[in-house]
Length: 127
Length: 476
Image (cartoon, each protein chain N blue to C red):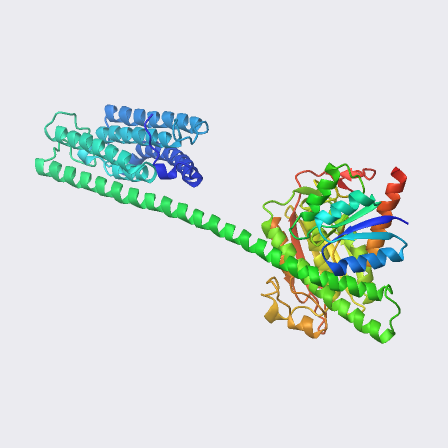
């Protein structure tokens, strides 16, 4: 049971991810743009943030991730991207981008669950 | 310091490179000239009957010695001379060389009979060489001064003001040039000198400018290519988002998150997923190609090929066993020297080739991977006994979006981009790819294909220790 903030501008991706994560018993709060995303995270202090790399502007997600860290939000971030593994060396976790892991689109339910659980268990351990 | 550098080449590297290269070339030529000079005067009297007096011999050997001396000095200092327009640079060195060469030739001409000297025409040669390097006004001034000196010498010889060291045996002793002969020689020689200088210099200058324009056009083309690739990436990226969403939704249905589905529906949805996966694959390949083309540099690291190969074999085990294909890897090398290249890119190459071998392999067939070392390079062969590539298609397989008809008719799905990615990567890494169909393990019905790639070895024969967790910045 964890509270997960999902920030993505694609309603279908939000719906799909919400269904999958809710089925695992997590509670989901959603936002469809970086500004709302920032607000819900600050207000609700979720256990995990899922962030799309590209919203209105390319790299929106990166800026938002940096903004979180700048404002002292240390919640683990899982980033949705459509390019990570396409070429592999695009960006690795933590490399200039303060995120903990990436999931490449299209998101397979199993992969999503696996990565979310992994990040949540790390979070529990470090606390 | 005289400014020898024309303003249009000041920041043009190619110009300096070619000046330096030509300087070196002239230095080598000069060594050869000294050698020829000594050989000629030492041994040619065995073939042609002529005699030199002691003054001539001294003069010629002295000049040869001087040429050798300044050539060695120039050769030595050449490496320290820079290409900065304001200070002493390669072009100044060329200038000095030209002057020294011309002075030497004048000495040789003097000691071999001035108007009757076999070296008289060498002046033209020297001036042509000078015109290739030096700016127009400089070489024209040099040609002017040189002509004045030679014409003076010619007339001084005619009027008996200088000693005439005619080579005896070639010309009769006591021969003296007439006024008309002297005048004609003076006019012809100066005319030829000026025309050669003007022509050569104009051509050389135009060549430099043409080369410079070409370079500029090329860099503009590169910029256009980058813009094009960025555009393609943007567009393809936009295409990927909705398809990804579709696939996520299909996964949702197939995963049973929205309720039960009957088997017939499941079949159709699974089929829909296969088709969306196909287009995502294609998009990913386009993204890869654009990405590789946009990369200005690839990382250069030591790569353990065996590790990549074994990883890929285990990764693709499922698809191989689905077709009952046996994949085997045999190492034909004595050492496991590391290859140099980009780990991720090489992985991509191997994964694509193995994937193809399985995809186009026959049911119950074999895929054999063999590594070898030939001529100091790493070679990897991946062969199958599948459908092979028809002769007509063999020249096109590395083209983007090309798919062999045999592949489509065999019912194999593909994007037609895999091999162009592989080729692009190997070009990047300085490697090569070649193929043969039929392969070594094919038969008449299933000729099979054999791909062979070449990669370069890293400089060191170091391999990571078994207990090392990280080698060259990568986890092992």
